[in-house]
Length: 279
Length: 159
Ligand code: FES
Ligand code: FES
Image 1 (cartoon, each protein chain N blue to C red):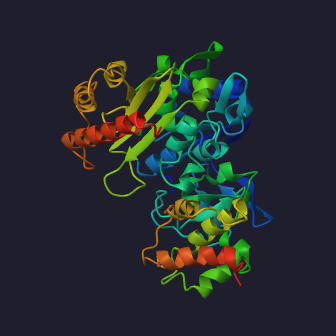
Image 2 (spheres, helix red, strand yellow):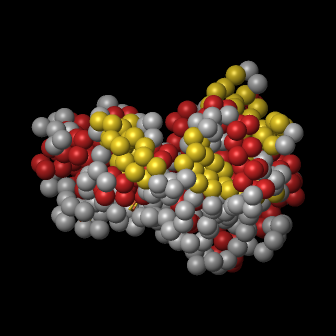
């Protein structure tokens, strides 16, 4: 039982969704776009949020698209993590999706929900930060498509009433060599202590992290150090660990110091695997 | 555009039958199945998406009914453990392998396993079975027997 009354909207088009959301905001209501709903339901039940209206985007065709063509892959924001994983169209993203929550919940949690939710890890952002992905957003000016990196800084930075419609991943990234690992403290199904995704383009490694700091990030400084083959592996790892954008995250799952320890071991293994041709 | 405010009558397709229910938009599918349709097989455990005791099958995939609003289940095909009618291979396999103790988790596990067989009619690799089963928790730790029952479902077709 959710202890608040909400008004439920189920639009069939992007314009209907946007208009409903915009009018609710003008009326001073607290609407939320709603896809898989896991986070909204659990947080509403716990009383952490009290949305007065939800706009369910799961019957909007553009938000449900999952298709690949010559340009690359197009993923609707209401596609579930399981659909993305089962499609095998973008193995790195599929691997990230397969380590978020448990399998049954992966059949509900959506790409848009994972990116736009309040839980800080947003692990699906990592492959998108690495792959020159673009994102289509629907708002006051209609549809705009922009680089994912330009609107994702730790979390999605959207304009008022804007809704995430689709993610577009270029073809090269779908076939590029990749690496993904997620370390947790105890159980396999848990929030990450350190989660890392790497993708190679033209022989250069791109890498992004979640769990390490209070937000997911990709760092060009860390990438430059890790790609510097003039330095031995251990020196690169030590230097990369000094380049985090903020103090490592510390909570009940692990201290910042422990997270750094896990990071260094993970980077060692990654660089050695790459050197030995295992990636 | 569909808009529901306050109490509304909607139709849910449950176990092959249309059912009219009166719901608030915030009502959970789990509560509506149990309290309005008397389908108490789906169990409330954590009500937080963690335990899997409330699992049903929606459009062929497992879903934790404590994380689904009744209003959004409209237009979808919902299967609860009652809809298996005691005839599903996994049900026979659970009995044969004693895959339960108190039984509180059982209906949720049955639905996950039945959905697994719907999606993978032939036995998938072991890591796939493990991945699906990891969605549910058994307080009595019948995990080995449950795993054996899944193998039995595929090997003996539950006989
Ligand atoms: S009651 Fe739904 S997952 Fe526990
Ligand atoms: S048999 Fe008791 S919780 Fe599983």
